[in-house]
Image (tube, rainbow, N blue to C red):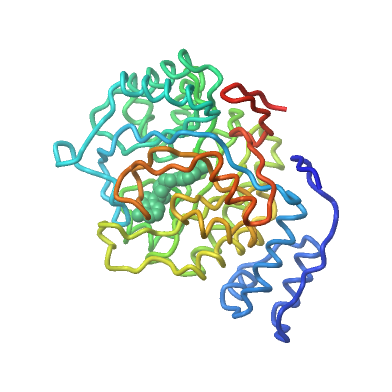
Length: 396
Ligand code: V47
């Protein structure tokens, strides 16, 4: 089958592996596109029939995307690791003047944009810590510098947490919707193209207070994305799992995202959530480093269950940097349809190397996707198919 972004209408019966019939009701619901409940989500997690869970998710994924699996040519940029917050799961942040603390100059950022352009990238994904002293102009100049040098590159930047921080430092007020709207509008004028999904963590108050007190609440995170959608930006949503949250917290988080997307679709906002990205907790040298992080099976289940719970989100991303490329291949067979891109430098987490130099060549990404049994499709940030001739590209 040729790959296209259109939703495919063919129907695959779900193959079953065992005599266990406990998932029958859920299979029925999925086959009849009935949204799953919190209890359904928990039953899927508790089931030992991983094969059925994954196959069910694969059947949904195939209905949406047939045999296509998406990747992009991108460059991640972490402009500073200095952060006013001290989230317990994070081993990226540093305090100002602490060893290893950095902030990139606008010259560095210009060089990054040149390298992105030279590599034929379609996207720069830019996030950083909540820097206590960088002025708002640093962020707007960053965007306009990149846009001037590389107007074709889509800038996906700033988590909802950073947006609230920018509203505060630009004296628009920390909490008001008007301030958030005004800051996003100004960033759009300077070249912002969409919001990444970071900073959502898990929307549970107990977990928030224990592991990332001081960060914006779940409601505030949703407010920022709602405003961005109303202003015409698409965005993503993440979930950081495998630390001190429960499976119930994860399913509630997914249902909250699904409800927000429902509202978004019903209100005819010009932007919506495009992808959901479950992020497995990577202990590193964070304050929670004694925890083991989620197992491979938990990771597979979480991807599959995300696909099943989030029936109104088009894409489920297995972010290869955090999942590893090998697990991302398995995940393509369990509900994921996207593995992110070439990346190049990534500083927030490190799984397989000690350095920020974490990249995959286009050839290796495509090989991994083909090896998993799918057709690699290069997409831009908005999931439009890219036609490429070396560094030159256009969307279909
Ligand atoms: O917000 C921080 C998470 C996020 C750890 O939108 C950690 O396309 C695991 O949001 N272990 C940033 N996760 C990454 C992110 C993202 C990644 C890829 C694609 C997209 C997208 C978004 O990483 C943070 C936080 O939730 N994070 N520390 C950790 N130790």
